[in-house]
Length: 158
Ligand SMILES: [Zn+2]
Image (cartoon, rainbow, N blue to C red; front, top):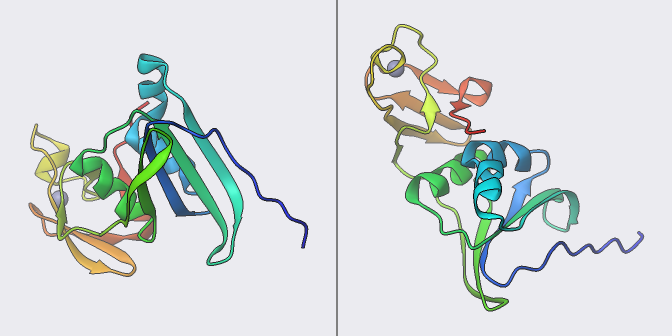
């Protein structure tokens, strides 16, 4: 095999999300609103797609300068990429690294697929219970609709 080790934009400060399933980095970037963030801050955001990985053959990587994750952001990553690792970088060094964990419930990061659900008609923030972790399956707190796979539609920021 050809050595195709690739390094992307080493960051001094920020967060590296590694071991994202190949093809999912752009979805994560959209849902987290990384483009808008980059426009606003001028910080580096590097999205690497289809890197070779011994454990998962192909993987995506996202690096974001100066980012601090909120709980909602972490939850988004854990639902889309349950095996992702998050590394915090300080002065060019990894100071903390951990695997994401799928939480017991998530907040207003997903749209309920039931169009009659109150969350789709009134200013009620969504709330969803994680009823299954593999595949990730959610149950709406309000209408109790259970859904997984492509029915999980994340609220995207542009
Ligand atoms: Zn609902």
